[in-house]
Image (cartoon, rainbow, N blue to C red; front, side):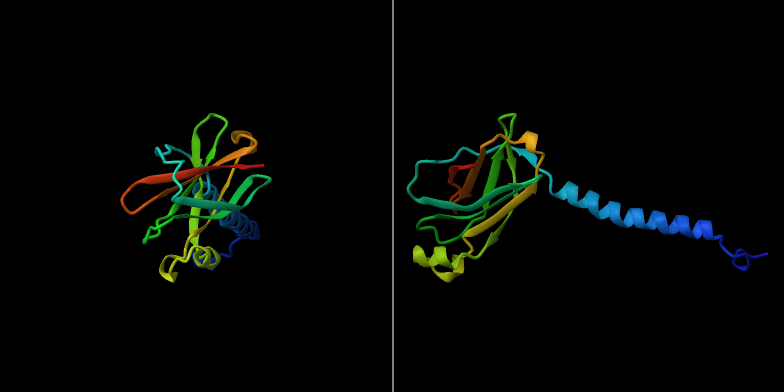
Length: 159
């Protein structure tokens, strides 16, 4: 007798459906947690006193277990825009790097008379956090390299 000639019991079908549902939820959840967790990073030495480095944090907020930082950063006179790295200080006095992406900020480009080719001066950085792992008030580092490799930075206190 062939397997195809026997009907599959309803209990087996229900078990397969439940297991499929569990996997359909669990796999994306674990992927999200893995890709959005903070990791210790060494912070490069940076020039915090340079008048060439300009930045502003528009929004810094913690919602339950998520940190969001929005703002902009630029190096005056730089023709090429480089990514902005955002770090948060942990309770162990090391720094955790937030995932960030560059976003257009035409208002900043206009204010500093920067051509449209480099107007992606804004950033959005966020990550899931464990609230007990972050100092309060939250210390944010904004780090940017120029095209010659010089590192600039600033410190912002998120209250």
